[in-house]
Image 1 (spheres, rainbow, N blue to C red):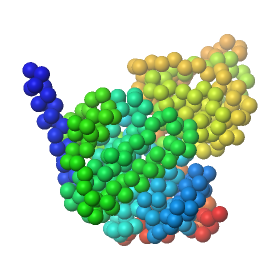
Image 2 (cartoon, one colour):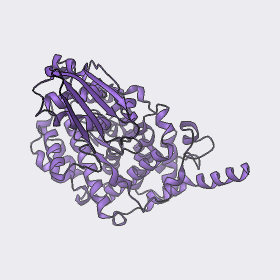
Image 3 (cartoon, helix red, strand yellow):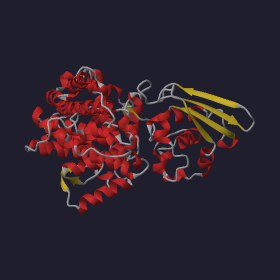
Image 4 (cartoon, one colour):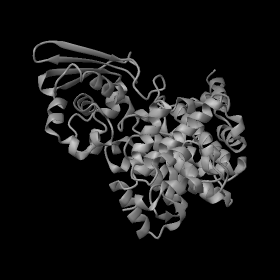
Length: 457
């Protein structure tokens, strides 16, 4: 009986990589339903806006300086900059800037941020192959579908062990995106998956530091590098994902490969949520609650106590009670409530070093308590505020703004991208091109509006 069980598991896990490679290499934009196409357009536009907006962030400047020191100048372009780098380094910088503000996208089922590593890898591959927009976006869809399902297969033990899902499944998805755009066949795509899988790494101890976004940038770089190596005949094992000593065996307690069964018939990119706030997505309902209380609370001084009831995953990611820096504050549910109530916003300024040490924000943070409720969905919360008068104010957020159940509208997303790209000559034109990448002749059309001279300092 044990032997039969083992045989059943073997059948379930056999040919996983071959199945994925066949899907990726054969995917056509015409195969993708319009609802998934629109999700892909939104995902890509969001990443482009974020990368342009953070092109001069300290982490970006450090990465660009390092690329110059290492002689990594090339022909691939960096969003929002004049510099041209080798394809892996361009993907690294664009992936880093897409994620550095924690303002990107999230597939909440396995806490994956697929757009940030996959779109930059796709753009780097697009600079090499110069495909039309439909092939470019088919690559994006392929990468997101694979990374999301791989995350689902490894969930939850992979995350519970401390692996950063975007940094581990992201390289595989990025390799798939690049391989599809480079026009590789199933065999070459399988090799690219193997080359990416052996480099999959990144842990959540890095949350609250520049290294978190570096892990995402490296995922993008690994993806394009893996595809290029495979295109030159570099090979790998047949089953790097589900093999006896493959990625899943080493990085998760168990893997459920049944999630691959509907690859190509159900589109997980449609469940990719875009963030209205630049912090961990599981804290977004808390910001919504804080904002909703502004009309009833004059300032934080009249608050005696705040009780946040949240899903247990919230503190796994957002448990920093007293952040000292802007990066740390992105992982503080206490800070998220404070800025929601005091500032009525949750953009990059609310997660700056200055805001993290604002006395009023610090005072309100200290009044915030948390209780865990596993029955709550991850995109909801309950908040009870007790005033110094003894009056209690309660709020329940059923679904956070930006979640799949309450998504950002097209107008809200356009406003986000335009605000992020405000320093460009024509940020509205950036939105027009970035939100219609399936219609470009090649990626040059995007870079023509994403790195004007006025954007360079």
